[in-house]
Length: 435
Ligand code: CTP
Image 1: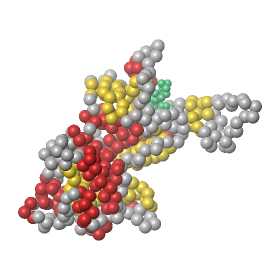
Image 2 (image 1 turned 120 degrees about the horizontal axis):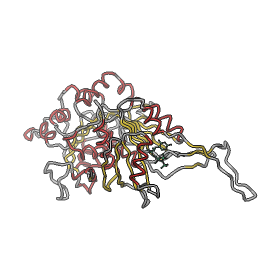
Image 3 (image 1 turned 180 degrees about the vertical axis):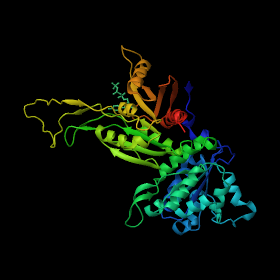
Image 4 (image 1 turned 45 degrees about the vertical axis):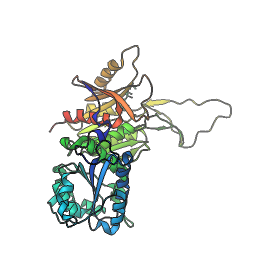
C-alpha cells in the first residue's frame, strides 16, 4: 500500500466552513478560544497570538470567549485587541445574534486554555450559566481542554472523575505539565507551553471531527533522541538523532487522546503538550525507563537511537591528553538490545511494539531485504524503515519510510513532514490494538 500523508498541511484538511479568510484565500479554520479564570489566563494571550499570526492571519478565525473570572486576570480589551473582535462573557450581549448557539455551532475547534477545575466540572455536568459553557454545549467540533490548577485540585477525585467523563465523551483533555505553580508551590498543574498547545490544536484540526480521539484510553510509550555513553565526565560516544520523529509521534498520540510517556534521550526540543517526559542520557537509563513503563503500555514505539556500544571503562576524572603524542585505546562492550528484549518478553500481552531501522542496503541484500530480516530478528510487530543511502534524515523536518508488518504487510509513506509519518504509524498501531 502507498500512502501520501494527509496531515502534511493541517489547514488543507481542517475547515469545512466558509469563514471569511483575512487574506481572501482559502477559508480560515474557525477556532473558539475559551479562557477560564486562572492565573495561566495570561498565557492564553500567547496562544491567541499563535493562532492570529499563523499564515499572516489567514489560517485561523479566532473568537475568544472568556469567563467573567478570566477577566479578573486579563481584561476584555486585551482579548479584543489580540483577536480583532468584540468579546463577550455572558449570553446577554447581542442577543439578537443568538451567540450562545451560533459561536459553538460554527466552530471547527473549541480549545479551553486554561481550563480550571470549576470549568471542567461545569463542562462535565452540562451546566450552562455563561457564554463559554453554553458554547461547550452547542459545539459539535473537536474540543480540547488544557487544564491548569494546583496539584491538589487536579488530583482531587472530583476533578479526575470530571476529566474521565469529558474524555469518554470524546474531548481531548491535555495532562497538565509539572513545574512551578502560583506562589511557592511546584508540582503537576502548570499549563503546557502555548506554542505546544497550538501545535496540538493544529494536529486535532488536521484530523477533523470525523475521526475523533481514537487513542483515548490507551497508554503509549515513545522513545526519542540518541543515547550518550560517557568516556569521562565531559566526553561521550553519541549519535546524530535529533528526536524530531519521536517528538512528532508523542505529539500526534496526545492529539489522538492517548496517555503518552515520552522517554527522551538528550533531546533539546520543547516539551509536547500533555505528554509525560522521562529524561535519560545512556542506553542503560533508557532501558530502565522503557522496562518500567512497558508493562502498562498498549503500544511502545522505539524511535530512539540507543548507542549499541559503551566504553568498558568510564573515567571519573577528565582524561588528559598524553604528553608523548600517543592516543588512548577505548574498549567497548555491547549494550542490551531494548527493542528485542521488550518484543520477546511481551510484558503486556497484545501490546503493539514498533521499531525503527535506518538502512543502507549492501552486498547481502537490499534495504527492504535487510529490514525484513531485522523485523524478524527483533521480534516487533511493525518496523519503520528509513532508506538512508542518500544521507539526510537526521535533523530534517521531513521523512519517508516503509512500514513493514510482522504479518507480512507493507505501507510505503511518501516524503512528507515527520508529523504526517507519525499519524500513519499510529494508524497502523491503532488497527492492531485489541479491545
Ligand atoms: N534499539 C534498541 N536497543 C539497542 C539498539 C537499537 O532498542 N541497543 C532499537 C532502536 O530504537 C530501533 C531499532 O532497535 O527501534 C533498530 O535499531 P538499529 O540500530 O537499526 O538496530 P541494530 O540491531 O543495532 O542493527 P544494525 O546492526 O543494523 O545496527
